[in-house]
Length: 132
Image (cartoon, rainbow, N blue to C red; front, top):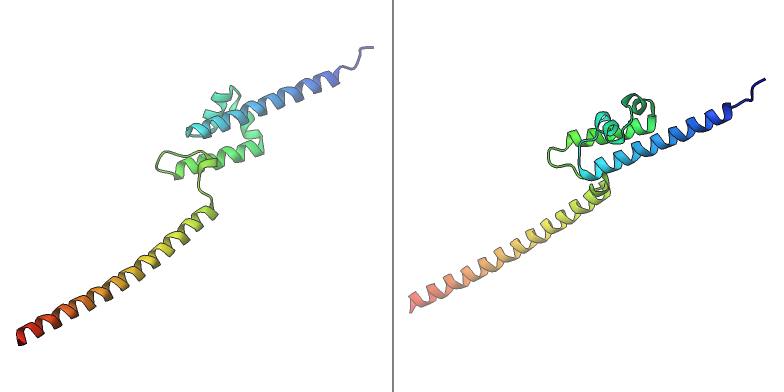
């Protein structure tokens, strides 16, 4: 009777799977950091793995699709995911811009009032000079 070596085969397959996952994740990160387009083809080529394996991994597939969608939406040079503005950050910037707009509007009102007073005083002094 032969010895049961299936444990060794299973261990080798598990190690090969983990190595392939690590290569795929590293390829995703490097492509995203470089601002390169992230597609199944580019990830497979960069990691030297098969595209069919990528399609079979739900989490890696979802990340590739997410990054691919971000790249296709952005007309300019894409930024790596960690450098993109978050929703909260954009909201804070909008609030700051609105506050600045209110400040500028108040300053314009104040300057218009000062200008109206100055013009009124100039007109009064011209009228007083002409009477003399």
